[in-house]
Amino acid sequence: MDFAKMMQTGAMKACFQMAECSLSHAKVIKKTGKISLM
Image (cartoon, rainbow, N blue to C red; front, side, top):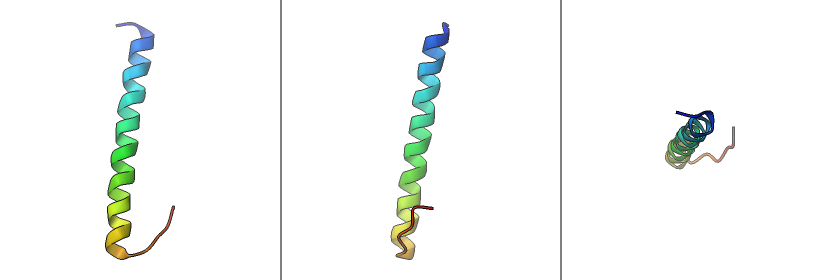
């Protein structure tokens, strides 16, 4: 496995994790009714 592919898949995984994190965070904000970016 070459380095470029490793970096690409790693970036994709990080991106998916970030998306999941922000999605769950948005759900929590909707539940509490508070709007915050922190």
